[in-house]
Length: 226
Ligand SMILES: Nc1ncnc2c1ncn2[C@@H]1O[C@H](COP(=O)(O)OP(=O)(O)OP(=O)(O)O)[C@@H](O)[C@H]1O
Ligand SMILES: [Mg+2]
Image 1 (cartoon, rainbow, N blue to C red):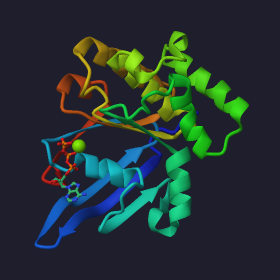
Image 2: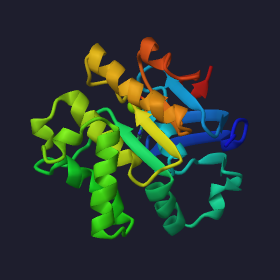
Image 3: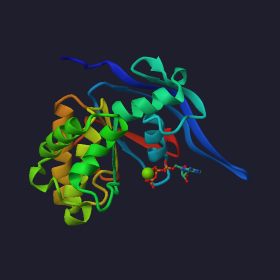
């Protein structure tokens, strides 16, 4: 399977502003960008430069105020809200700095969640959740709740949850931001392995040694690529 050089994401002159009455915040100013299938891209830039906003636009969580966004060759403006919601559930996985796991809920049930939204039958949910948890090396922690897991283990559960619907793209917003350096490397090794298997990964980070796990780094400042 070779998907090298096939554009997955293509942004042309994307802008995103927030109208707050008195002031308008220009979170993204003029972003043009192509990301190919199977690429591992790091996104770096100072606080407030628009990284999370860009990730939210890329992941169909937020719509741009200007410009065009083609995903797999189709302009997303031609998708209705229902289809976009469906894409978010099936084509995209999200990993956050704060893990965003449900408290008082086992690793297994946290990982099952995206499949519940996707209407997968219970037996299959359990089977696929177990496989995803084993894949991130936590087979012995299926029934642990977040507060019974280390930070790195919680992040691995959240990676398992992001993977469980077999998404095309993994969006990681500061996936190691809450982890020490040793645990960060463990998490990055998992992301690298997923990239080797063919996943497209787009990751925000503040740390240069974390960005080095990616093939390409995009620098953003004041809502623009520099
Ligand atoms: N919902 C919103 N309403 C108004 N302004 C917003 C909103 N979301 C983000 N902004 C503004 O847009 C700009 C970009 O924010 P964004 O969260 O994308 O930055 P970031 O690069 O992710 O920063 P950080 O590294 O601190 O996470 C900031 O100036 C922020 O205040
Ligand atoms: Mg951010």
